Image (cartoon, rainbow, N blue to C red):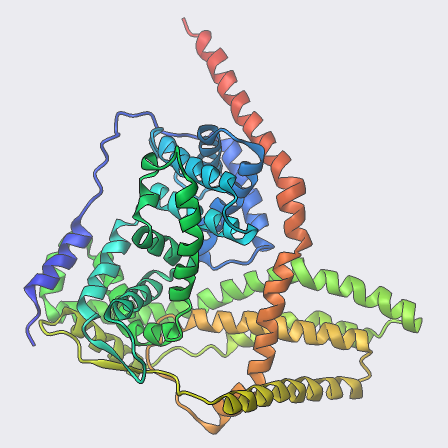
Length: 523
């Protein structure tokens, strides 16, 4: 089929557009190099004890700094300046590139957040949600994402007529919204906070123009509570994952095309209009991505192991030895060694057995790319709604799931008992098994970023799922619960970070003062 000139030209425009900078003569925000090195080192250490996906680390840093500064500083302009300077010093933003005027934009976002919080219209969790949304909004100001937004809109426009739902009544507006959210998730790996901000802009446009309500904010504050519920309902739609699964091949194809175009940035139009050359470049990108998958897995695995060791393993092992000594008057060195070696060994084998997708996956990506570049819309994909179950069927399945938990953890506990594990060492082993398995599962998902063909259903896969799902579910619950009481994060955020950042601020001011004095010595 002939390629559509309209869609190809749209892609050319997306990749050829350059954000004009009309502030070249404006003074830029700079941070002293020495302060930057101190801050950068601190962030590296801090991120080891707060595991986040790499593309979400900057947003998490904005939220963390914002939370601290909201307690310490009331002036939104001063708060905004400290926030931006801290992000530059830590290496999250380039030094000497952002204009001073951007601080005023950030200050407005901070100010409206402060005003809404002071209304006390919602619960503490609502306030935390607002802070998270504001961190996304601030990142949107500080980091240009025009291209990403353009690609998401492009993909949505190409496929929104090619997806339908069977077995569930769904309004056209909700169907289109879910497809758009799936495009955002798949193309830029957006989390719920990023998508929540996108929906807030749509559901409450007044949020973007605070000047119209900042003096009488109660009505907006009260509406925000209802809007949050509406947003979360859409983010947790029962078909959300199925939409994302259907969209993924097209999104992967578009991301591969993005990389190929960036490698040939000077000839975007030529590449898109030459099918033979495009196929060659796409194949090169895919092969390179496959080759670098294991390198990425090893890096992420090492980071996850270090995170587990610093935040959980040390604590558990410190408890295991003294507890056994107190209760049994001796330490079981065998179980202690197993609990010490088990997490890194499991992580090692996860990385070892990551499989690189094959030629069938490559062909599926190439096919998906042709679909979104072709003149005709992609062929219709039908999403099947989950089957309707009676209350008795739901109860039976829930009980079966519960019994699976008992069976799996019972078998493991029985095996450990044969190996002379005490109940303390058993608990620690099960703790690590669940937690590390969950982290390993997340790493495997990351390694399947470019996998677009479905896994074959075999007896072996079904057995693995049967025994692994209870462990993974327990690990997910433990991960969420423990993060709330992470004593290492408490130390960094509430004991160490505030005085450390104050020290860096004073250091920055001293360097500026010293420069002024040096300038005064000039004839």
